[in-house]
Structures are given as C-alpha cells and as structure tokens.
Image (tube, rainbow, N blue to C red; front, side):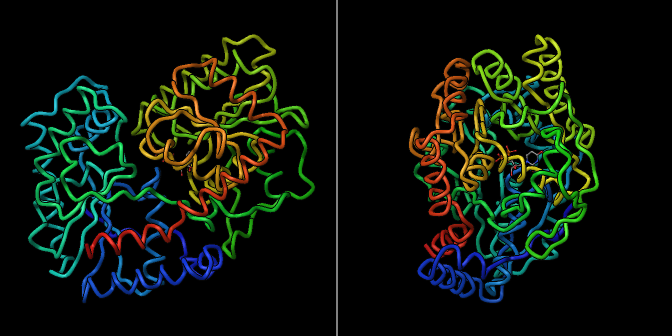
Length: 466
Ligand code: UDP
C-alpha cells in the first residue's frame, strides 16, 4: 500500500552550485536552513503514486538526494492501489485534462471507493509519521490524504501537475470531485498560474514549475562516440560507430547499453539529413500521430523520429499500445518516399538509466525537438530539449507557454490541431540558420535561469514559512 522509495540519482550538489553561481548557491543553502528549522525534528515527505516514469518521479529522484545533501531530512513515499482505485484516478486524469475518456462517472460511489482505499494507505503511512513532519502530496491520486493525515503532521500541501488552459465540463467534474478534499490543505501548488481553477483562486497558491536535473543520464553532456552508438542502436544512423561502448561512464556512474530499441522504419536518415524528434509517452494527448501527419504532409525535407517507451514493457497501460499502433498503421499507409523519412522507435524500459541515456542522445542529435501536445501540464520534455540548446517546436498549451516565448526561446503553434502551421515551424526549425542557433542558445539560458533544482528548494522554503 505504501513504499518508501529509494532514489536513483545522486545530489551532484557541488556541480549544481557551480552551474548556478555563488549567489544562487547561497540562496539555496539558506533555503535549506529555513526548511530544516521549520521541520525541527520532522521529515519533509513527498508522496506520489509512481516511482518511475513521468515527470513527477523524474523530479523526485533528484530532489530527495539534493535535500539530503543540504542536511534536510526528506523522504519519498509511493502509494499503491488496486484496479478500482486506479480506474478512478485514470478517469480523474482524463477529466482534469478536459475529457472523461471512458465516459464513466465521478460521483459519490467513486469518492467512497477512492477514500476507502486511501484510508488503508493512511493507516500504513501513519506508522511512519511524526507530528513535526510536513507532507507534499502530488496529484489527484493523493488528494484524499490531506484530511486523512492532516491531524497527524505539522502541515500538508497539495501539488497539482495537470490542468487545462480553459476549464471544460469534464474538468469541472474533476474539480467537483477534488475540491472538498482540499479545504484543510495548508497550501496548494500549481506548475503555472493559468491552471489554477477559478474556485481555488482565493486559496494560498504557490506557483512552482518542475525542473530539469542537469547531471543525470537524461540531461548530462555526452561524448560524441556515445551519441553515435545510440543513434546506430536506435536505427537513426547506418554508420557503425568507431567504438561501440557497452558500458558508458556518466558522471562517474556506469550505465550499461544492453537492450535493443524496436524500430519501425525503412532505413536510417541519409548522412547530413536534419532530424526532428518527438519523445513522449504514446498518449492521445501527446498527439504522436498528429506529428506524423503534419511532418509527412507539410515538411518537405528532413527526417522524423517518433520515440516513446516500448509498449510491451507497460502492459497495464493498454492505451499506449493503441496509440503506438496508430502511428505504425499511419506510417504503413504512406507512399515509400515518405515512409523512408520517418522512424518509429520504442525504447527499452528494462533499465531506466539506459532509457534516459537513449533519450538524452536522441534529443542532442535532433536539430529540432517537437512537443505537439493537445494539452500539457508542464511538459518536461520541452525543458529537457531546451536545456540541450535545441530549437523546440511545440503547441502553445499548458506549461509549455511558461517555457517558450515564440521566436525567442523556441517556436510555438497557437492551435495544436493546425497541422500546416506546425509543419511550417518544423520546416523553419530544421534549417541551419543564425536565427535558429541564437534561439537554441536562448532556450538553454531560459532553463538555466528558471528551471533548475534550486528553484524547487527555495520556493518550498518560502511556502512552508509563509
Ligand atoms: N520519457 C522517457 N522515456 C520515454 C519517453 C519519455 O524517459 O521513452 C521521459 C521524458 O524525457 C520526460 C518524461 O518522460 O522526462 C515525461 O514528462 P512530461 O512532463 O513531458 O510528460 P508526462 O509524461 O509527465 O505527461
């Protein structure tokens, strides 16, 4: 029902402090002191429902070791669930993103089952808590714990990573379900201001976007031979690399390249052919097949890689298999000259460090990275690519709007369903121009200034002492 999650990353605090410079490093340490004082003998708990996969887990694997290295007692608890619980939370996920996919309800019966399950989680969790502890509960899977555990700890905060730019009937139903459970939270956290629903605007709200962890396998600098090897392994290069490392040293940690990617393509790009890549879950809202349609209809040159996790490795998420298959079917229906300009790539998931390294290498070798989401909470893939100096072409939705200023730090398409507009921007981003080069440099600067892990800790300190 509840697991105390071990983290995969190390803090890399000294490297982070060197990257952010002395002023921000001092601010970071002072924030840690503030949190330590506020906690007294207590622990800062982050609580979510998955230890791997997706942006929240990605972030906590770095935040927890960073807290620890700064002398703050911080832990991460992952709640479990049965099929009924996760079918309700999946419905909530759809609702809060604007549509209830399975057409089911979110009424009293669902609320009772949801709270019954979280009651069992709370009983197990209570054993680990002290009255000085502070809870930061992530997303709609944990909201019910505010009331269930609020009296056992010093404070509870609820952090929302999802949202729509304009509320719909379905999202209102989602908020009808959650709002009564939020009354006793000491504060609410959203990634962007425009995801705060009207009904919560009077509450204490902190805006805190997620961050990019600069030194993990997903984001750290990679040697050219490692990138070359990954491209060959993922069907994006015909050239056998000069060396073929099977173990790569990433910041002193050994990562093994053992597992093959599954590639659907008619062959790799021609040498020198510029690469556009979208790396996402195979989710309807990430619109991978929309990227394929836009690219093959409106982008006259270049090569497209659609990259996601191997659906065979996530059998409990049937939908990902469906949307992956949709891309393959659409690709099969293309004429040969277009088919030869696209690869659909499933990355192995058996070793998450290896998966992260493959994502990193593909993002680094792409001329442009796209994120054509229909809706988006924050869109960590965008910040990851910007950190690597890529020109990102993305939909102007959700947290992406907080990351990219059109024409300055990337390119935004206002209507995510406008394939021609998206295609035109991808065509522009694939060109080797001084303008694109400058945009890539500014994109990286934007991430260095706004989306690194020190923000997480400084803002948390402000919030829990407000
Ligand atoms: N990701 C990954 N492997 C994949 C596809 C995606 O590691 O095959 C990562 C991606 O790099 C990012 C996270 O999953 O760190 C997705 O976060 P984002 O906020 O973009 O979307 P979410 O999946 O949380 O909706």
